Length: 382
Image (cartoon, rainbow, N blue to C red; front, top):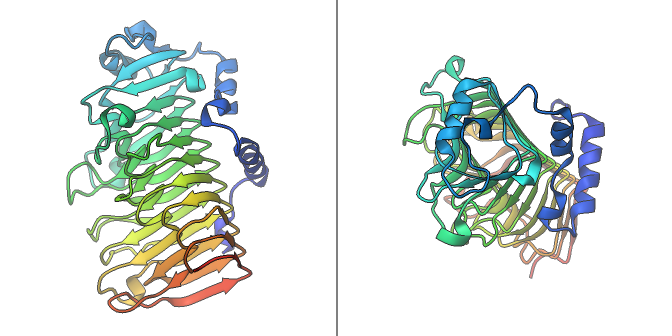
């Protein structure tokens, strides 16, 4: 699948090196990141400092209105070191929101539905919000204080094109850290395109969360060089959940999940999962999960499922799980049902509690055109 390998190799090597160095380190030791240092050294002359619009860096008062004023005033908004309490702050096209890493902390206000959010308000891709970037910040929720809340997210994106989230830390999210959705109303059409989530960290703190990243609709998604820890309640899917709702208009294709590290992941589906519940007008395709490391998972490392009565031509296809390392005991190496043209190659699975599962008894759909090459299973299965 040569079409998938378009990332810069030098950058990927650097990210893998950073991940290996950081394996034994708590997340806070990784901040401020290289991204943060680059931004800080570049200065802030071109950006509007949120303190100038009234934001409180002590966290004593609500800074939401000040953030809204800054976003309405300038395309480039800077968040200095400090602790800023915000809630339901809307993003817009052309916005660059940046800080200095962990020291620029945005804390989700008690009772707010989202920390940062946006919605294009249109099912038409040409009406999407364009060129939003969020860099070198730390977003913190309240799951350690208020517990689980499935639909309260830190970053909620609906109808965006060319969106970059880079060097951002997410912690203690009650629902999702990042939700790539199709509006916040049921059966409402939105489409996301060309989204990059790079060198971010996701710490669920006490696993009272839904997922680190939920993807309902996206064509062109890169998740690369990120760290995931302590994510997902036992009754929620896992760390990264690709799961379009049961509406035929959703699009989910051209996804790359590469060079990430996962540790202590809960959930009831998989660390990385694709679950399609209905027939899609545009079949899910072109999904690559490669060069990731998993250290401990309650359920399967990888899960690819199509459910419902769906003909072969409409099922997920051109999927690849390759060159991943799964250590310290996931439940299963992988679980796949109902997918078409799938390659599982060059992976290493160690001490998984149960066997890998390909297909299952009816009503599960059959797996068609499956290739498995060069995988290593060590002490897997009962």
